[in-house]
Image 1 (spheres, rainbow, N blue to C red):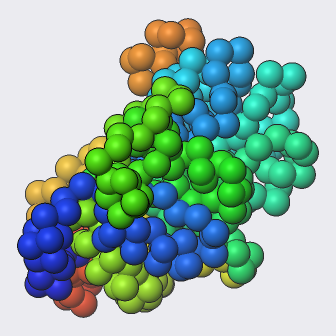
Image 2 (tube, rainbow, N blue to C red):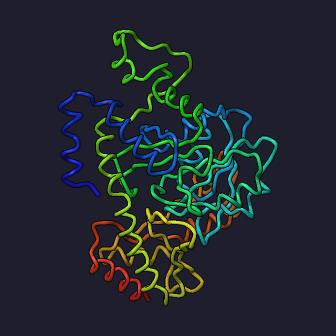
Image 3 (cartoon, one colour):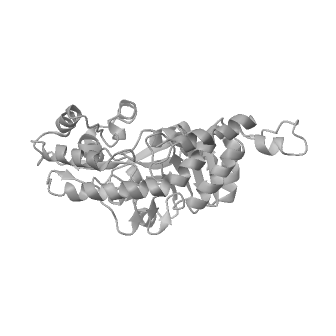
Length: 369
């Protein structure tokens, strides 16, 4: 949710003339790292580029396999293919929408280099169960939805070797577009910092504030242009200061939904583990069509007619055209992800809603017949 504070935050980088990655980005990175218990945070242009940077910095490439949940946004798997590696899909648990550890073991092979654990909708994946089943395998976090989330007292972004966050407008805090890598690995952070800036030996900020600002940096690796602008960094700093208030407010109304909708036997609302903090990027339910009076799509249509916007939680990777054709997959290959694709439904939960709005949504769901 953007407002006047974000508007005024843009003034300093505009007046200073420093519009690309610079001091505001550096300040945002420092604050974000501190908030998520990580030694390093490196801002970039999106969560997709954050994932790509992590994989590239780890030299994951042709011949390598990376395990990815079958129910997630397509970018999680795409980033693996960008590196020439192979995404190996793992089914998900429809109760949590996250990677199902029970399906993980059978997907491991001698070529497995990493597992991308997605914290979908703000609920952290079961990292301990994943680590126990895959000892020695790198765990990476797709924390696109999980700013401010935690798992057993440890913040998302500090649970694996590295994590990727999103600041897309649908996330809890936004910079319009934008992403962040967090890691406690000093060498990995240094390599990512270079890769996001064309592979330059030093950043523009270091060069301009250094003793010889007119000398161009050396380039000793093939990099990318994945930088964040200082305009985004300025907005991100303001947004980060609101993160906990946003999550607390969403948590209050998520509990309201859970309480008010508990009598709908056909609608399973999100689980909230007692030892973790849900980030509530979305309130995503599961429509049990064996009990529901209508199909999920018919329910969404009925709500739309009453002015209530809904959407499927996300998609099953193996049911998308590119992956279906490339790997010869059918919906039945990953039944948990298939059911989540067909029966998940996100209902409104955001910081501009009033108590009357939430009551209206709950009443509309009760009126479905």
